[in-house]
Image (cartoon, rainbow, N blue to C red; front, side):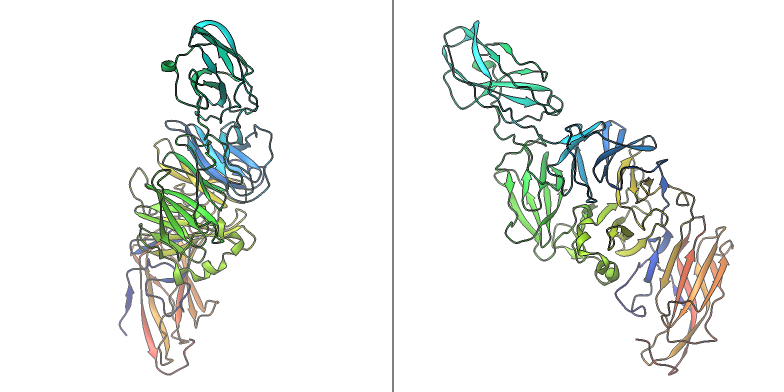
Length: 600
């Protein structure tokens, strides 16, 4: 037969078909490589940014808290609270309200609004608010005690009956509680003013002010803004003589505290949309901690399935249930509910990522993508073994990130959707990598860090506003996953691949290969190539060759002419320091009809 040349090796893994049935460009396994164009490259290296591990247990969340333009602090979730990256160390944040959080490995999710980060996860009650020096429960309880209104002497008020209420208020964020109980009626004559007393002090650390509201002359039931007491200790206000045209907006009775048992949160259209896995709740606009008790969106609550994901996707809110996916659009009072799919659900909030015009997520049985129309499965038989390995108990803990561009320009890795895959005991075994441009899959492994993959990954930013991907492993360190280095903290990256089974024929012929060549750049490192017969797990022959050759095509002295077989496979292993890639393969194959029966 004439020589066979494969000039496209970027098909990725295909686990679900017999190795002889996959396409020429695919691989039976491919570890620590990724596809780009028609080639495969070694994965990027990671580098620790911490000098010592976190002492408070596994890290299960991370978020870049923006303090000012170009200034960020990395906040971190852990088993029993939150922490921050301080230089090259990690320190816990004090819990300002003195509460304790359930010890759990459930991952945190977070967003920032108006100088505050908001955090949630399963089994931790309501969602949390945090800056770089504290964490506490979100929301402000309404005052328990009514104010007292009294005649304050000469003023400008009309003769009438008056009632007043007050609220607790955060001057920084604008978060405000529902109003206090109503004061006892005060009857005033003409040309008077009101003296307030009995204004309560909040024990909530975020309260920095109180706001006073009262009725218009002779009115009841609606209270209008009078004044702000810009502290949380003064209990009196002596000079209320605001006339109706000087009073502000009416007090809101829709500033309730957040719902209980929130597990996921999402900032969408200037509101906090959150869920307890049954319903979707939404905050007042611009007030992430204020919730009307009636601000609920029912998303098929009686079908017995959980809400597992919320994601802001343009003007629509993606709601992922375990049996269907729904898009919510519009405003309160006119929310529109559109079923994106009633056949494919979403199992993990952290798996949902937007890439260009696609939304990609993990659906419990496969990964799916949608551009706004019916979702398409994108894994199918190609990642069959990986999909079947994810335990039911940890399907909600598949965590994904998208590799960013650099300086706004795409790089070889900037078309990758990466999913952290949990194993039987909840630790993460590997990273499943999907090139959404070429629809190819591969896997990355990280040895020596407590597990084969990070427990969490998130985005951070450098001084040029470029996005970085940081991760945390079981070892308690923070790592830059795309450090630009050639080793993992000084340890060479081991890359392996096992290709298609060549030479198999329906008539049971045997085959032998020779004159094997690989196309790879010339670098100062060695490559080991292995030949496998008849799908054996043990290599029949192997050769280690120097890649430091001038020619791009590297000759590999491998052949099974001495022992023809039903099929042969080629594998490789590379553990050198320089960057490594493969862009082609060529070989000759000889057929020997009828020598043995097919292994299939």
